[in-house]
Image 1 (cartoon, rainbow, N blue to C red):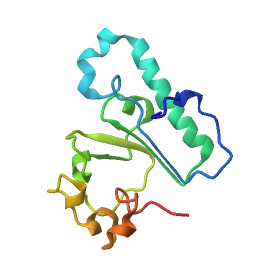
Image 2 (cartoon, rainbow, N blue to C red):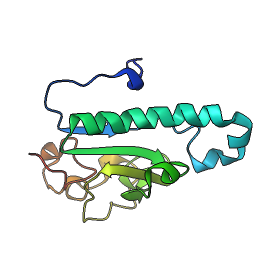
Image 3 (cartoon, rainbow, N blue to C red):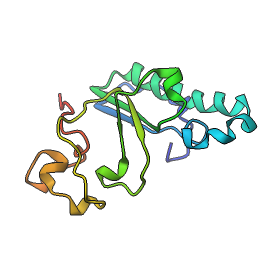
Image 4 (cartoon, helix red, strand yellow):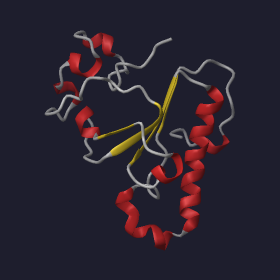
Length: 149
């Protein structure tokens, strides 16, 4: 976790959780690192999968309206099945060009991402969040179909 806590030790909270976005470390899971998997050994994979398992456990226990586990395409398909969607973060204003996968209770927008703009502030608001008013976009611009209740 960004604040230094270990996600594997995160306990259930007794408050409503609207959504969860998890992005466990991809170093030992992404296909781009496949050439190093054998040298790192099974221990590195077990550690990586323990982080993924903790993220899935948290989503299962908290039962949010939506949850997504993001990771570049690679080994996770073998353990969690096919992703709900794949995407290039650059199509949504990110700086990386890679194929990421999202698993979980992901609500995919029927609208295609706005291609051609590499900076979020250059893309039209309606494309990003389904609203002409940038102030209404809030944080839901990636998937306008995410339920609010």
